[in-house]
Image 1 (tube, rainbow, N blue to C red):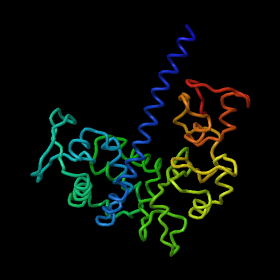
Image 2 (image 1 turned 45 degrees about the vertical axis):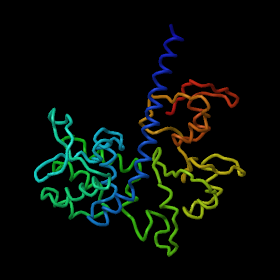
Image 3 (image 1 turned 180 degrees about the horizontal axis):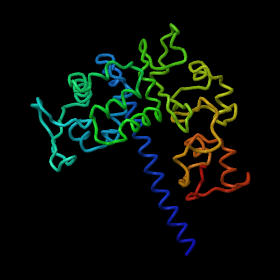
Length: 304
């Protein structure tokens, strides 16, 4: 019975891992697709781009909800008083709630900004600094944007998980950078979002990126970048590689406690270490492996 039990566990954990990884990639794609839209709304209406993106991610399930797909509605805004446009009927607080339907995603983002700026109950939020995303998050809940009692902390968690606050520091055509005071209008931080994985800063390499180029733009030396990412000196970056800008941690974040990763076919242990921001030697230590341990698809890998 025990082999069957472990096989069942492996299957369950594999499904959980696949779901988590696919959701994570969907969320990153959402950020890539809508970051410029959120920044444009911030410039016009003084709503933090981080708040707009976090609300879009949560309210639309990263663009995967029926409301987002069928109605281009990214923020769960209902018809309300004064709306004369089309709508879609869905169950929410009531079985037949009516939600606004837009022609494009741009219209949804624009209407979200107008909804906040033209509604008197949100007026106090505009006294906050544009960089005070925590104040905005708690304020939206306090002003009645959502009924979820944890709406404020949820938005803050999303913002900090994906480092969305970087978009609130949009200056001179680029996002947050250690070289914001430079006159060099580098496109690096337009082309590379800085993510947070295991409380570490990380980017995803694009085609043509080199260690030297990333070092020049981030201020972290090429040798340190190779060391942080545990690659030999001659390794050439490939599009899609995770590049950590800080030394990886000894174990996964708290969310990985008790939930092992299931090694997929064709996936290496190094891939797992990079995915979760864990040093390779510590991953071996956590799992009690010897250096010559032979890995196989379906193997459970503990992260804490």
